[in-house]
Image (cartoon, rainbow, N blue to C red; front, side, top):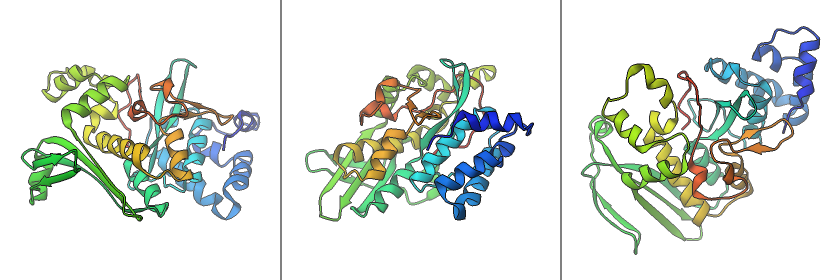
Length: 298
């Protein structure tokens, strides 16, 4: 799935403009894409990736090979790069170790749901945020939950979140549910994400962060905590109790990684996640510079 650095060098030798669009439409890249994706779908793939990158100015500054490698990983999983679908995202990352700006491959929780359904093993799967006043009781022994959901969608959207619930039922009848309070999720993010600081998060919620420092809080744990939490719940649920199809295993191993030109993966937020299904995999990108134009990766 990796694209050789010769592709970039090849385009430069022929004096092709150094834009991502020109990179993707250069003969060497087109040939490689057609070999890996297939001639019939090659143009569709190229067009969709150019479109996804064009909506994110910060992504256009990334090493194009890491963008292409991430996109190839998404294509291998048959997931769409469309921000509207939220299957997966290519997120700009300032790689201080290499002195480059790379694209990090991130799967949204919609992507995980798609892969689980596609496996044919899941009869039901769901993950929801529980709002203030909705939870009546959760019994971890029987794994039963009793809630009184707010029926007014507009009101529910404005109501603070107090917890998260995820469940699945396999076609063979096996069921599993988990519930985490928001406090537990906050502690999880604070423990495992290098990009997140709980004290700073609370200050941000209270409006105590000066406007000129807001760029420091571009991690999606700050920008959309609930969506990050929903993804974390699915990862916890599926990796520990679900049936892991080959595609799901590929997704878990590639998520939150910068995919290098040789196909190797750098887990830029927490290096210890390589080839493991451990909680720290839930920690996502660490953009250490001002990146405000990104789409929400969920």
